[in-house]
Image (tube, rainbow, N blue to C red; front, side, top):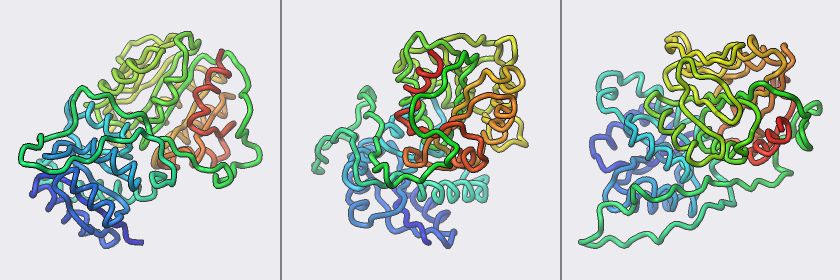
Amino acid sequence: MVVKVLVVDDSGFFRRRVSEILSADTSIQVVGTATNGKEAIDQALALKPDVITMDYEMPMMDGITAVRHIMQRCPTPVLMFSSLTHEGARVTLDALDAGAVDFLPKNFEDISRNPEKVKQLLCEKVHSISRSNRRFSSYSAPAPQPVPTPTATAPSSSYSSHAPAAPAPVRTTPVASRAPAPAAVSTSGAPKRKAYKLVAIGTSTGGPVALQRVLTQLPASFPAPIVLIQHMPAAFTKAFAERLDKLCQISVKEAEDGDILRPGLALLAPGGKQMMVDGRGAVKILPGDERLNYKPCVDITFGSAAKSYGDKVLAVVLTGMGADGREGARLLKQGGSAIWAQDEASCVIYGMPMAIVKAELADAVYSLDEIGKHLVEACL
């Protein structure tokens, strides 16, 4: 099936290059382009694309405002382009909160220097998010402001850098339409309580919003240390940790080598590196291994937790592409630890949790909104 894409960017060069890269894939069709957020909304309504690629900084209406309107009027998977800076990370996280599914760094040098690598990555992202659970009939984000009518004095952007991010989109899929879990897996009821020494959460595509929704349900008195592994570039993890720390009752920080695990603290694996834990409760940050696809890698952290904490780990695998976390979860399971997976209906991409369920490693499958409260029940 051909994936229809709308390309949105105020740079003519970037629109052309992205369109050329995507059109080279015979299973992708660029059905239209837009130069600003207002045009993007109009084109999305008229063309009904399967995926939209979206720049942030554009005249008349910026990308985040456009995403909010699109999610209200014609929910469509959106791939954001962002700069690899702290500010670019902050803006990208706002876009994900507004409803975007995923993001890619916007780097003109890479397009010129590594066209084949860029083509492969961009096309893979487009194909993966075209299969995401971003299209749905009920969307509960707050209504955006009316789309401004273009005038000669219109401001260059309707987005304020100090405006609060919109709450994460909520899917309300009927229970009957969810894929049934294996009979041996618990999908309801309170989990078993245990004196866990560590909670480990791994995720990828859709993870920033998912982690926010889980962690904001935890009280400051949460008794177990937490480690977080989110597939994310090096420039983004510090900004993401800071964002979570402001929103959550627990403390959240980007992990550093030598950090000590403690109750009520969540340590986020730094992008581009690997995070391991040892039996003394210390964190080790190692250089990213080029032989590994993911930096950070969920399998690496889960595996170290299995070795250090035996049956005293509660591991959770949230939304994401691929199967990272499955082999680490297998080691944890062999040691007697508990494994939870997010259910298909609440995932943006049902890849990583599906790998856990198919391998029969999941002790429980919960919807995203249930995971936080069940963590409290299991650990308090």
